[in-house]
Image (cartoon, rainbow over all chains, first blue to last red; front, side, top):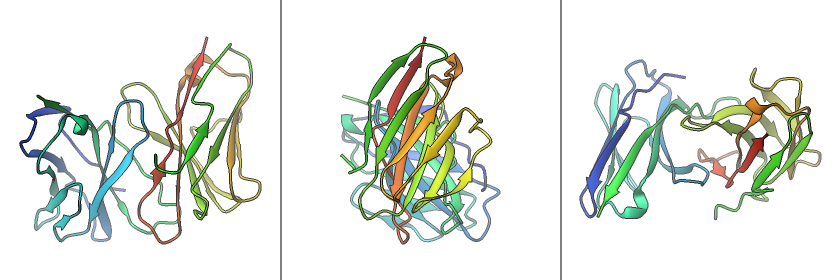
Amino acid sequence: DAKTTQPTSMDCAEGRAANLPCNHSTISGNEYVYWYRQIHSQGPQYIIHGLKNNETNEMASLIITEDRKSSTLILPHATLRDTAVYYCIVRVASGANSMLTFGKGITLSVRP
Amino acid sequence: DTGVSQDPRHKITKRGQNVTFRCDPISEHNRLYWYRQTLGQGPEFLTYFQNEAQLEKSRLLSDRFSAERPKGSFSTLEIQRTEQGDSAMYLCASRDGLSYEQYFGPGTRLTVT
């Protein structure tokens, strides 16, 4: 699975959009971009995934660049409950075991 | 609540003791994963089951660790002769064969004194 690079931390104001970047310059054609988040003292939670088109669900939007070497997770109206560690993961969707390889993630702090 | 439960939520044990953790996945999920997470790090894959078959084990899973999923439903992770380096959060996740999404339990936090 391709490696990802994320900043260590960022913050944003409550109610504003949070844009979380991720670099995955070695991504291959059959690898998807996944985002999970982990709120303190909880297990990780799936947010969204995509291959090359932009994706949106009730939690977030995922913007993938045309060359697929980077992506941005957008939380359109961040709340205090969005404070968490966000993990960007790149992997083949239907691998034999489909295990997740987590990095250190980016810590998002939403301030009042 | 994701529907994946783990028991116990916290375990404190003395070095050298054996401990066993249990994971109950979402009932229709045939795939089950164990991960370990130490402070400040992301979760690390330990092992994977499809139904009752253990199909992959990480090199992190030393011979003191054993995992089972006897009837393809709940799973247990046992650590024998615990060491202080085993102190971590142990996470269980499950998914069905069609979904991309893994559902994680709340984890079991192990402290070895």
